[in-house]
Image (cartoon, rainbow, N blue to C red; front, side, top):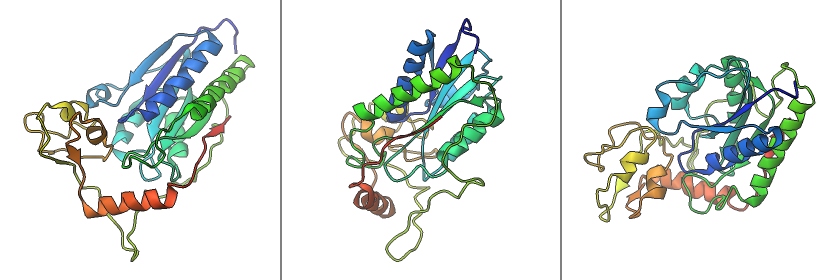
Length: 276
């Protein structure tokens, strides 16, 4: 790399409950310090921010982060991701998962970024508190996780300073062709389908409209927050952030799946994986 080259580091992320944002920002600011480069932020969590996909250039270094949904990227975000213009920029794909497994989400993100015209320099898979649960991976990412995010930034910056050149995509864990989305099942082995499940509103609701404001899919009717006419992706932004704790899910399949995740993976302590 030309030591005189001026970079702009981007923290680009979808983060309904804030965990992905923590990691992406940490990596971006670590790169900023190592490369003496400014940081800009592109938070495409709000639906309004996904109307005009960005276009990057060769002077950009983009840390792009998304949560893992059932072992893959959230399918409703794929059209936006595939319309981003890489323009020869370097990218660092990052995914977060709720302590079960990130399966093929990282390789999926890497391949989308490569197809967009990015060159992938490094990558990381990190653990964040599961969107469905108050206990599964609670408190993650923690200080240890963020220290590894900073390590990812430092090592990626070293690659650039040592003269990294575009070539093969960064090697990550995952399968290609991509596996189907993870399918939860009940004790009899029957599939549990929660795609159409939507959150309910309890008596404590004050109709403040906060849930409609933070819903990344604009699924909640702001005029009557009891109505959810749009598609709910179960990100739990409305549930976890409701100031009155009035939002909840009561679907039996959803609750069974949540309880099984907590029972099977609550005792594990998965650690971040870095790829360079």
